Amino acid sequence: MTRSTGAQSGTALAESPADGPMVRVEDLHRSYGTGAAAVHALRGVSFEIPRGELVALKGRSGSGKTTLLNLVGGLDTPDSGRIAVGGTDLSGLGEDGLLGLRRDRIGFIFQSFGLIPILTAAENVGVPMRLRGTDPGEREDRVALLLSLVGLGDHAQQRPGELSGGQQQRVAIARALANRPALMIADEPTGQLDAETGLAVMQLLRAVVRSEGVTLLVATHDPQLLGFADRVLELSDGHIVEHA
Image (cartoon, rainbow, N blue to C red; front, side, top):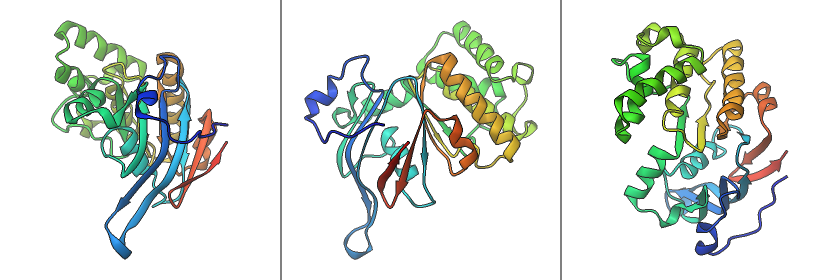
């Protein structure tokens, strides 16, 4: 069980050793709106995620799961508290720094897949490497490897509309791995899939964590999928109420 130790100085957070936790969240607060109408999405959330673990985040709709994922992924900023990813304090990064973090060190998987309809599966997987300026030959080799990893080596030239929901999510997983991220963040990745396909996708994510050595933080409402996690965090009304 991970126990929070309270907020530390920004310097201490930024100088976490390479073998320290992949994610450290300390006393995180995030609200939307002001006054009596304010919604307190997160109220003093603290936890750590060791490197190479699959951690599931559960909680009912509106409990703050997506808000927390967006903050850890550098897509949003907290009202107070600190977040470190791989020893880097996000509060010390400007917009360019956060962009680089998201491009190079974090992979995102969304419930809606987020694929570009006019591009083939291979082209979708290659997008992050194009943005990074990866050599075309290296990019093509990496795309082929990743599509093979997710079981879609024979579907490289198909567009999203020609693929099933489960296949589209597999393409999205391959794309999230394109730039060899240290951390992957998945928001309800099986939410649009039937139970059998969702189970297969979670089995794939579990295998990816082991084979690629990445850390995965995944939000899910499906109790069946929690068994794949090394640890489960439960959010309720903006608080962590359970570490299992």
